[in-house]
Image (cartoon, rainbow, N blue to C red; front, side):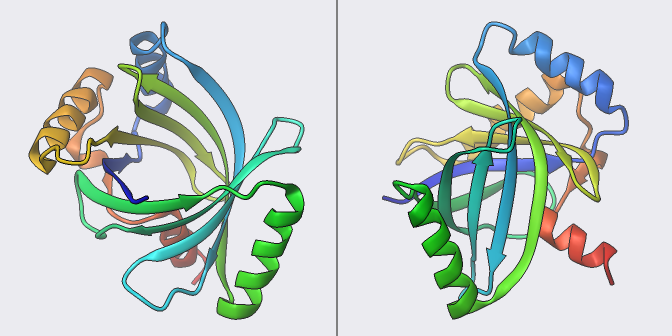
Length: 184
């Protein structure tokens, strides 16, 4: 089943201040930290395919997801349509990794520490420390099937303002693109 959200990524000028604002805003909500490794594969379409490993602080695989998504590379809030498959075991994860690596090739790998905060029980705020790039904030507004995009953009913009993020801090591309740009 396909899902959608409205999302935006930011490179905050004052990350510790923004982190404190997020923590204060979401203090009564669920919060957890995970290590993530996203392996991006070659995709023959308009979107991207990645295999995400979610690991504990000790580096043990908690669960993984195969994700295909379509999202424009543009500044500001944007709609993302995606589909996820969660393998049932570590063997399934390793098989998917081998299959897609051979079939499509590995485009790149993103490693990050992600702190996930919930806002209003369903919207996600990620405070990411991305290896090779630094600290970022991602806001994901979870959308209902028939909810208009404009409503999600308004929720995201209001949340951005509550946290203290600025429009000048928007990042218009994925982490993998930033890493590829830095390596060339």
